[in-house]
Image 1: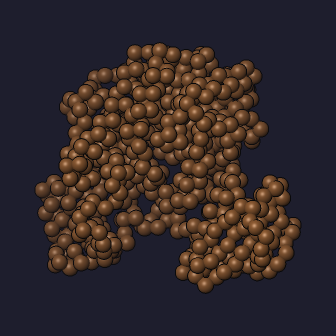
Image 2: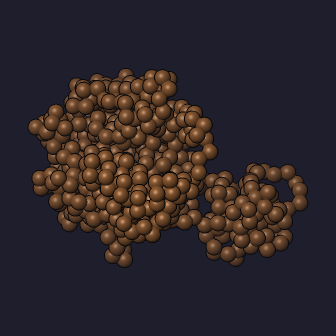
Image 3: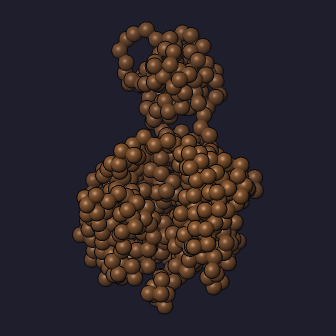
Length: 596
């Protein structure tokens, strides 16, 4: 850490460049008064770094906590620090095009108001979603009710459904650990997440895209604003150039930190090699055509030479991680072993934006290994292990009981081996979650690990684990995304969301078929429940079914939301719906993570 260039203040200069005004106070509430964003709570970051935080992460927090309206270049503005991501506002002929309207509608509306208070009450004439992550689209209904072009990359809606509907309850639970919105903002608590500060907890919305970008080189014009796109398929994502403004949007392809190949909240493993190649493509397409490069997180980079240097270093970062993981993997090392062996080149280690504030070398290497070889490391001892609680009970028994395990852990703690102390105490807690001494000591270990973490998401995971060990499970506090996303889903995706809720064993002996005639879409779907599997078929052949429903797509969503069948034309046994509902299984939004 002594070699880090803390004297280099260029990032602070860039983060301040173009500043127009702050939101004062930087507190955003819902209509009923609930606080869903409070950037003022990070005021403590202006002080000197204490010994409860990694100085590098503290520095990143100072940069990310800056909030307000900024001019990027002529006609291009950003609102930063009013949600996890940035909202970019591009002035067109008659209004503005919004790029990535934040996570919550309330935050997006506040950001737009801040812009309008200084640039005039211009209407929203278009929206661009750069990626399918919720912090890039969720606030859309805070800036528009639709009726304008909404652009997104190919595969956008499918990824939204996979991440936020199908696996939504599980990813939201882990997201609460990733960003730590329940943690106190303080030098001993949450001080950011590397990629931004934290998540807002307001209303998540979605309007389906009306213009899909399907190829690199595609051009679109919205309200006189010309955009040239590059698809970066690592995450159904796209970069694009505003040629008239010589401004390049990098979405999440290149930000001022090492991003996650696999977010700790979950998701598909991204292609690190592909990531590097797309950045090479970005350089090939846009170098020399941009005077400023900005992204949906952090602050811009100005100047052609600096843009090339920044993109080249980001490219080398992901290429190096990929290639070194494969090199060592082919020597027989496993993911955890490679994660201990890989060190970044000095040329990248001395560059602030290559540091692992959100992603990390350790968990990115394991993700790359997983992409190629999966969860199994080839050792047959790991092929059929007991699940965590059953393993823990046996480990604790072998070590002489819970008290003995705690005693061993204290020894490792005194020696400074926090990592193994955590492993031992985790076994003690999983073997007996009522072992208060083990819980309290594990919370202490997690807290100490958090204070030494350069990675913001690791710090939040450790602190959330410590919080739940001492105080129990803390409800996430954010609203479920499903009610607000359902209106943008296709019929097939709606039925898929039912299929993943079928309680298989309860439905083993059920056999039923329903025809759904969507009168406004002119489509018919047949859903069948048999052998515990709920399947669907578009345009089914003639054949007997238990129930036929004729309804609109809006009525279908209402029916599934529990609003009943009033106004729905039906033929057959309506009791079939009750049988279907009877075998649905709801998610558990606040399931245990650090206890069994």
